[in-house]
Image (cartoon, rainbow, N blue to C red; front, side):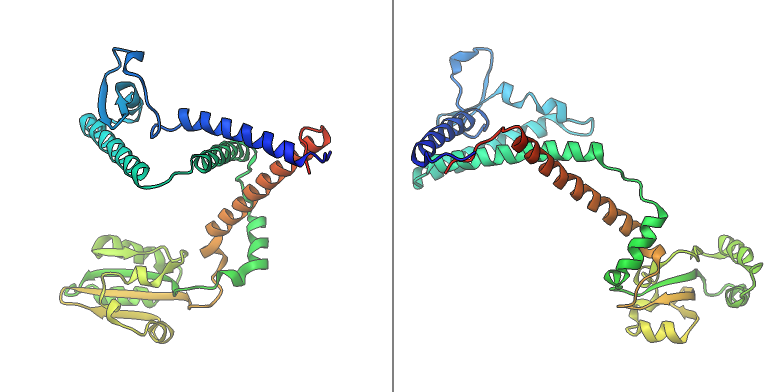
Length: 300
């Protein structure tokens, strides 16, 4: 429905907006709130800056935010100091700036309405959102978008063992790492548990190569690509320890990672897409229902 009453409506709207803004401005923000000391003689003033007072009731909410680990006196003091600093900034601004209160009121209204809409939308979406993602959905998304997951780092499947370099069992470890026999896998794990200072035996798990070589001499090697390509069993020593890396599989920068490596990321993407779709549908439904029921009017 459209009506050619532009000047009158604009005037009426601006008056209502200003009135609503002034009410919000006076009641919603403690930075501009002033109380009369005579309102409640038992409500003690804690701090004063100019004509603005901070009352005891203004800090009552802090008790709900305290945990057993917090020093209550310190928390209250921080709040008071923060309040004083805010009031001093406002006092300084009011003395040195020509403040357009109508513009401030408009921004306060915009913020209030945006906050209300955001909270409603967030609660609605969380109630409607299905966070379960099937393996089929993950695989389909991966097939259609795998180039979007091009690697920015080298990833590997590997067995890693760190042990004292003087141990005579090192030769046994090398034989186990070089073996492709399925029966040797458990023997290798048993060896690591018994002799290793540190180890990683999750050979089905893809991991960032930079993470697995952290705190080893390999961090000094600047050509990881050549190293991984040429050596299936990497061995380096420092003054105390020997480090062994059996590279089972690898992917280099800019290559497409295996599905297992990006599975969790894809699940989050799918859920976030659902979240965005629900939010958009909510807005459309609210608008269409209001339009159908003549709940709003746009004037020209």
